[in-house]
Length: 253
Image 1: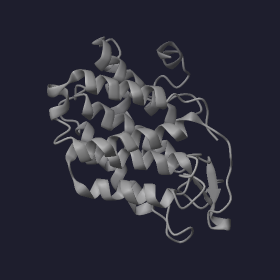
Image 2 (image 1 turned 120 degrees about the vertical axis):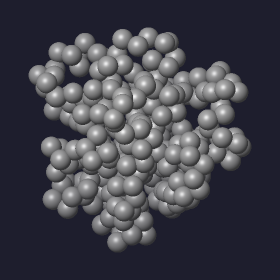
Image 3 (image 1 turned 90 degrees about the horizontal axis):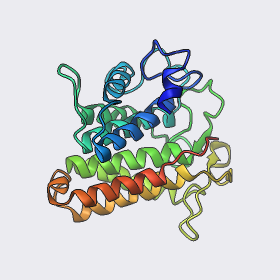
Image 4 (image 1 turned 60 degrees about the vertical axis):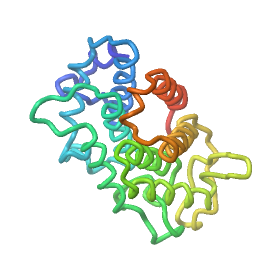
């Protein structure tokens, strides 16, 4: 993975893969987990350089790419940032904190919650000229659900928990989260008021909702996220490993 990153044509742009942007956030999230679990810091400089370079206005919405990004693209970087905050990944002096960057993603995404169709939900794409703008998909909604749940657990701010509940409850009214059999459709469309369903099955759709639900459970039952590493590093390691297993990306629609 890191060899591929180092060999890319866009290597002069920290955090940017050739032909894609979101995968940098996914890779850094995994490398942060790797550092925490192993203590191997050989990739830390690359992680910091890429994360800070792509931070935009502290919201991972850099102007160089914002004209074609989707909500799911942005949220992967937010998940990387909250991962860094949770495990106390080293920060650079003069740079925003990891949790503030995760909050920046949340704060820019929540205003995009769309009630003009389907009574709510996050669109896949951000701009009306993008193919997929009229699609509401599992990863955009599940990703923001997970980010909100993790921010709730980390900060103990009930606003994040309320948004996590709102996203979950809305998703459960659509094919994106069928509670009867726990099938997660990849997508649904505004044209049908979110009654149709694209049935591609991707593990990361399931992973975002499962992981977010786990964080919400811990939000209710743990007194403070910051107490968790001190009380039981094993518990935190298991939580991260569960997330790692759930979020293995097999592809995107």
